[in-house]
Image (cartoon, rainbow, N blue to C red):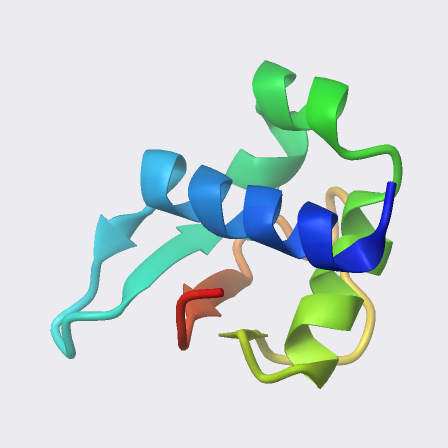
Length: 82
C-alpha cells in the first residue's frame, strides 16, 4: 500500500473512533487505535503510518515513537483532512 492511501485510511479511522476535543479537533488515544480490530486488519504498520502522518502535519501527538502499553493514553489529534 502507498503511504498516502494509508494516511487517508488513518484519518477515516480517527473519525470513526475519535471524539471532539474542546477546541473542536478530533482526537483518539493510541491505545484505542492499536487495540481496535478493524485498525489491526487495515494497518500492517500502524506506528509507521502515524509517524508519516505526523511528518506531514496531518496529525499530532506527543513524542516521536508510540509503543503499545507504554503510550496507550497518548492522544492522537487530527489537525487536517487529507
